[in-house]
Length: 489
Image (cartoon, rainbow, N blue to C red; front, top):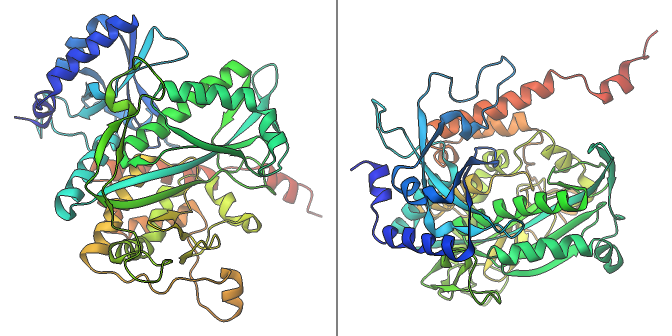
């Protein structure tokens, strides 16, 4: 059977399809968004009436391959990744991800896995390698099969709530003042974040904490860590929720990394650990009847955390954790292209007075390093911002971990000093790439991280991001005008 046929006929799927039909009837769902994630992290797909649920589950729907690259043109007016002559992908729903939209309860969403067209001459019905969500599932399964470990991830998405003019354009201002952790500023956005939390809980988020950060209108709301794929789904869903809440409050939900200089950017610190064992447990979050399938409300609990200290030094991770850090340290330059994936991302890294994680070093609770052990049993990758694609990030981290564990890579000694003071004392510390172009060059040299984006995916990512970099280099900006307009005679 083809990959597509295996996916449709996998054990237990037919039962899940029937469970979704029961939910459709119970919740009176009329319409369903069938969605996947583009290489740049956008949510794309099709809407289909709920009457066609069973047929779509069996046959799927077709959409041009280029949707995985947002169907955008490069600066030479060529479609990125796939031209108009390319076949159409087949999107097959993953019924376990079915969930009602809390802001319009007649509508639901479900994630899909993308496959090559059934009529392709080469690899018909094969996994579409530019499907980043399907790719993460495959790589996570391969990693667990090889090493026996499950990657669990918790993300800290910062974003800004900006005000808008009557015509919908941004005013250039955040809703609140840039006072970090001030409850009064947090309170000023209470109606907004309470609505975000209401919608998030209705879509399976176990919300655990939140605060006002130190940029105008900047909030960070966190939910419980989980399996890497489920967490990536929640981060994508969180962005959709914020966009909806912004429409309701006439604001702009801004995930752009650095809309303002001189204040902190929007990072998305990614905390991770590798586990054995554990069991999935449904968290109903107060619902008497779940507005979606159990998997949407499921979190993994228990098991053994291999990153926990295994010596008397409680600041040092266990052996598996150290090797994993070693793998990430080795591949940090290439990983920067994934975690800091836009031209604007590097505004964050250049504005170093605001805790920018620009140094390729690691330490315990040391925020001046690109990596830090944030608590016993987990470490935090800091040079990730809120524009990143979590599916690419998850797959890339798994490849870095695999290299570290397989090849027993030593990360070196942790740095306990402020990295700037350590440099003054003579320590030689490499910086991360400080432009998108440099990061893409480092990625082009790193076959391990490239393997997280097999075949067409790397081709599209490089094409898309290199075009973005070249467009920037070819653009006259306000800075150019301010600096050079009247510099002579």
